[in-house]
Image 1 (cartoon, rainbow, N blue to C red):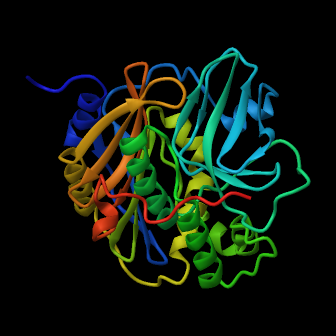
Image 2: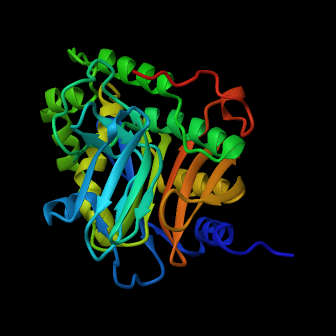
Length: 328
């Protein structure tokens, strides 16, 4: 019996029949390969967080008096809101990042799983959350592996908080930024001119729905969406987030064939299907040198996020978490 449902949609997309690759572009040791969907996109039925926030139809804030690993989304609008894996939420009692991609239903409230990316602040709230650059790829990869273990073992989309803090602290050191609250957003702000040079070097292309990012000649991550307009709106922030990992990498090009092989390997990975946090279902992927996830809703792969798997036990799908989350 063949596979069907969300897993089939993801495998078919990754097998090569649903994606068209464009020529690779390189700047400062970082390579981006544009991806296009072969199927013509229909109407984009959702809003992104930044769009809904600008329209005043969504608020993300603390759950009650505050819980490190959870936030509360209140969607007041008539359209669902798509929150993106690794998207940074700045404000409230501390800055967080989303543990996975979530589609929040219209006129609904939903608690969402997050991880802290500002270890040294917890107290007076700075108000409802605002969007900022995504977490850099290396930390997103480590988070994705931990979340997959958690989902498969317990059904909970929990990150390894201690590991996220370690990745943030290491990146702050490597880019030469001191933050009084160990907030990764300070790295984006203080290295803003450098990151903007990368954003200026890579332009979104008409119809582009995804991108494979390479660092020093090797694949670092892939983000693919169901609609080109989604990527167009996210593109500058995504490129700046990729570039934070690229600072200091001077050489290394990657061609489109390398990226295509990575996605083809992902199509052969082990996939498990789980109830999504919001609307739809989530597919978690491991194996063949890849880790990641895909949110499937309304018969479409809304967002596919892939990373090269870490070598060793950390990439095993059923390995227990090596660290436990600490709470304030």
